[in-house]
Amino acid sequence: MQSDKSGWMHIYQYDMNGNLIKQITNGNYTVKNIVEINEKKNMIWFTARKENSSRYDLYNVKINGTDLQRLTFGNYTHTVNVSPDGSIL
Image (tube, rainbow, N blue to C red):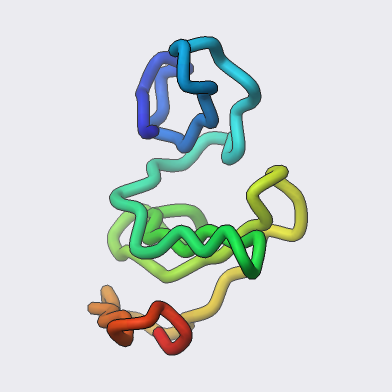
């Protein structure tokens, strides 16, 4: 789930009863949207304004909140499409 309760829009994990398990992303940046969640790969792909506040880049992070990686680079916002089975972004 996404929420701006920290003052920035981020990704949070809740259990089925609505109890917070953990904040997956954090920092002074805005997560725009979740592109894909792949439980089998233990990964979440999302777009965010992290390095530059004028564009959105694609990132991935493990579901436990570790190993955040920026996947797109350049001076432009990127549009991402996901394959039907979620294996290719």
